[in-house]
Length: 73
Image (cartoon, rainbow, N blue to C red):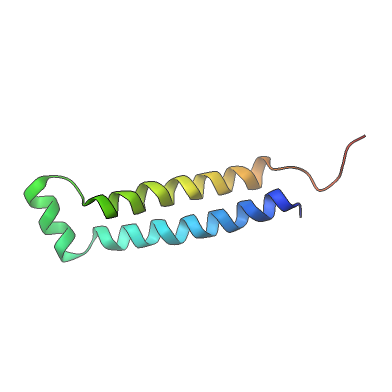
């Protein structure tokens, strides 16, 4: 496994954890009350959701398209 793919796996795992944290935060009682009153999520929850999703997508992309383990001549 190449270094780029290894970084992609680590990024995807970290992104999944951050996304999972954002999804759990979204379902909290305080977040539901804030969403009911203002119509939007708090900045922290939005950052968790967007950042986690972007990191997960970037990690998957690196794994799928990342450099091959063989060097071409």
